[in-house]
Image (tube, rainbow, N blue to C red; front, side, top):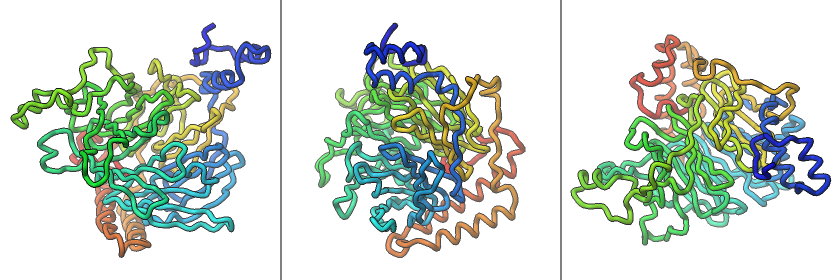
Length: 492
């Protein structure tokens, strides 16, 4: 039998015997066992972690996998002993709005945590020996800061991106972040207008920490090499080293990217709103300038340089596609599952979790994860365990404990999304407005930073649009596509 087949065809009893007689290493046995499709089909809710008082927007494990960190609309960060269901520590993040991401810094004894939020702030939380938590302001985006990513194995360096299009590099040993670039459109006419691309996602290649990708409100996932950056404006680092986009989406102004993830093989996973999920290998890039030469010539009146022309790798450069879910309402992440990234996982507007085989794109599992929307799915670093969260205020821990193997439901793509209904009456709208006013007035750095009023105004607009959309929906799912609102209305 082939020793590189990790799709669940290995018999665990046979592999166990081979391990005992030295026919397979303990590490390979563990990888095969953890990637077994049998375990995926037996995933079930092991425990619900209940403490937050709002949507849980981020979940992440520490390096050892014994702690889970979460952040929520209640602006609190909680550290969990997820196996026992106990809260190890709960503290206020210092943010004035929804916490979008919270992560442990590596090799910090799990005492250094970095966060970003809807208020645009980037903050640090330090857990002292006494158990007290001190939070401090690190940096700011103009608009929401949805994601941050940490340089693998580095206890000091991480990156953030925001709706202002800015990508910043933070070094906890210094006093201020480095503004790397503001992401701009590949279209020459939009670049001339200096129009920034709102960014929703950022991820670092685990095999090469010099490479990171960003994605936002256009069709391209952009890959950058930090080694090209030179301070003082000596180079144009804003020019991406490579671009990735499915061929049929090139030039589509209606799509955007909500989630990015790198596999252990440096493949790039990209999730689009109102579209599907795609997997790109390194040879599928479109180059530093993805605009065809003819389009560049028409718009600028000059020829593009050959070195920056799009790559032409033939018809084989077609990404794997994963479909069945719905990504329209929120900024959803996407992830891999398995010791060697054997599976792709995503949440959905229908409140379910979808799991596909990475190599074939075949859907193997659908699980009920939330009454409304599942936004976050985080794999355990060592075991076949998942953490998921969404609109509900709890976190669900998934382990392979079901007695029977699950089967796929019959109505996967026909099922309508469940209405969120959290702003369905004028009274609920007023309650949300009062809550927004209270949150905007509480800002430790509001006087120093400014910009909090604009963030509050954006959220006020979102609340009104959500109310109007819910009021006129009439259970018609197709209204989401042509409701007259702007492209950013699916953010929460």
